[in-house]
Figure 1 (tube, helix red, strand yellow):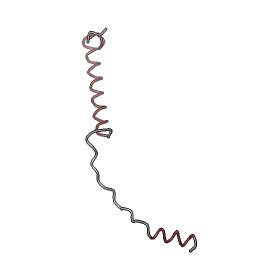
Figure 2 (cartoon, rainbow, N blue to C red; figure 1 turned 180 degrees about the vertical axis):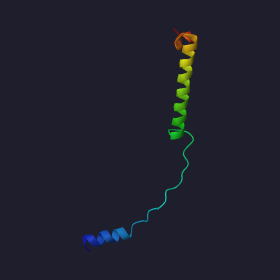
Figure 3 (spheres, rainbow, N blue to C red; figure 1 turned 45 degrees about the horizontal axis):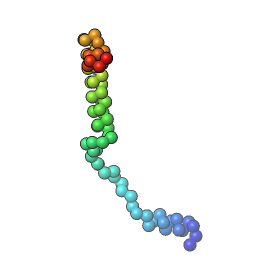
Figure 4 (cartoon, helix red, strand yellow; figure 1 turned 90 degrees about the horizontal axis):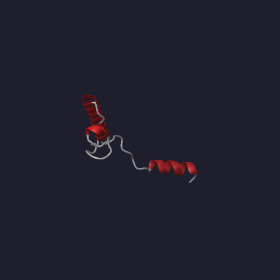
Length: 68
């Protein structure tokens, strides 16, 4: 057999590939888009609360916590 015939035979005997992608659920923990989004939202809320504390008490956060 020549090279073209071998390639053709190889292509004909290949295992068929799936045509659809499985619908897998994203994990509830670890590095995934949901946990990263939740972490970002919590960080933004914490930052805004820290700014509010500094504005209303007229002190920095470290002074408000008694660390400076």
